[in-house]
Length: 446
Ligand code: GTR
Image (tube, rainbow, N blue to C red):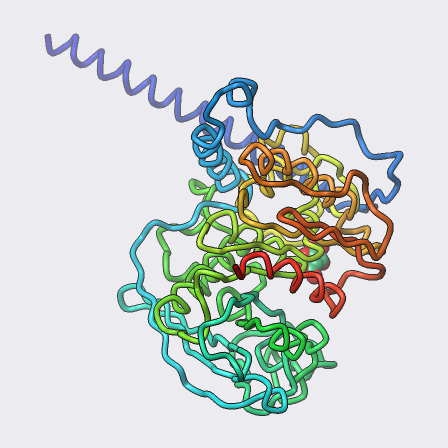
């Protein structure tokens, strides 16, 4: 009996050892493959900007034939949506933590702005977990004439709240900023010189004149945008959820910023009573457009979603490999996505998902995908196609899809439940973009 047990034990140990060895060899092979792909992606990357060189590709389906035929599309779609959301979290953006946390919100400043047209409020949003906490300044402008809470745009900014408007009362962030002498950032510290330098991207007057509010926070206060092994920002609140050799599906920075947008929405819901938290449009440009899409997908409290020039990892189809590619983005910004996403460097065809499915996760809420004609790095056509293809889900849910049949000429905007525009010009967000976003946002007002 003893012997038998002993040999069973030995056998078990042998099996475990063999399994462990096999797993580590497999692990090493996977790591090697990732490294090789990584190295290849790094070596002399030349972006394809020639439509005729886009590889042949087949997109993963929005839903299967069974759901298409079923009499209960909405019911089936909610299950399929959950499945897609999980795939995006597992394979691309990384899962968000499940641990408990607390959000509190305290107003620290208020006054008139924009020549008296706007009311400015500054709130300190504190996200805490046990003894640790993180503070983010939320800047809110609402029309001075508003007598009730207003529908509001919420988006993160790149360089600090003080860059959003030339308003001397706006607090200058003390968080880490990317060095940029032209806006007064030296030794990673922002300064007075940056005040108002991003105002072209935040036309506060236009927005409040249209009866909307606009709220923003500096993305670096949620998570500094450099590869720090997820030691700081929101990641530091959940050390058990940090990316490690075992945890390759854990949240990257884009997921961190998106999670932060949800916490700002928590704060707005709880305390910021000048805004209507049921009518918040989440918006973002470029990497922050990728972020607004992931925020809109993971948090259906956002009433509508706008992605401006979000490109690779945002609205653009990864399989087209046009402009910035998966390999390139993972090499330049290894902290943006989860570890698993690196498996798809130079290997987009193996992705179980693609970005048209991300757009479909907004349905039936209004979604706006926008591109700029000279922003080939972000693949305008790939962004358009995502919105166009995702429209099927909107239609099946009884709403309407994108009204444009073909990729349009520059300066064309099609504004509806699924909206798309191609602005003439470069990678940026400007007043023309916002004029269309305001038209779009009117549909959530009534
Ligand atoms: C680029 C990056 C893009 C885009 C952009 C931005 O360097 O390749 O994916 O996100 O930055 O955020 O401005």
